[in-house]
Image 1 (cartoon, rainbow, N blue to C red):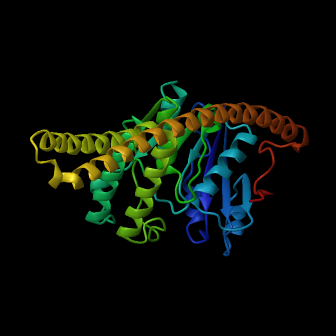
Image 2 (image 1 turned 45 degrees about the vertical axis):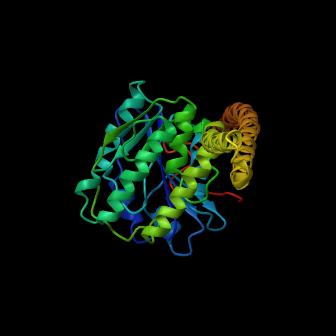
Length: 339
């Protein structure tokens, strides 16, 4: 069993060495533990610090593409290197590395395919009241959208099984945390959470530059994901509301017309017709997008199988070209990824 800990990085030269030093290099249940860094187009000494810290692999993106893209690049690199379980953590040492064995334990026991570290949000002094409220609200919305019970959806400290990692497709370029949970719930993956501790902040959050910006970007991400993966439910509710409102207004006109007072309520007839037409239109859109969603599901299944075949081929080639030594490709092995 191999565990690979991946760390997406963008200009993390000041904090990365402490983060890597804190990570356990032996974890019960695994024969090998490796560390992989994804350099998201950093312009500082992130790569040099990573290599000096003794990481096993460095994946370099040619330009800054955002946290979500770096996360996906890390998953693909970990799968290619034969990871049975992948743990994602942040480069700013936010999460307590000592809780990593507890994070992977449900996967080792066969109880979960994805495990999310639940931070003690209420007790984190560096989180403002507005940020704590947004975290709770966002997690509640994601629980509804994903049919999961994860209380800390934005947490980036998570463990993912190999099978689950092959099934994830991230389309957002902002953050992977919400999208992957909704996908996991949609694909009926076994998802759970475990309590984890946090360390004092080493720098301001880069994902939450402001309350309104965070609300807008997170909200738009959730809406887009729900519309993509549950289109029928997304469109049917407003369709029914509009059609029902139009029908009520139309019946009101019929009543007045039957009582001989319809001439003064023509506007109601027009409004009712518009609302009913809009409801029918949204209903048709929902049906069409639901058919597209079914096609997307088939494409994701094909992509999953292709990933499995490609991963097996990459593992064979890597094993054939691997130099002798206990660390495989060797500490600091660097790979350039186009993108």
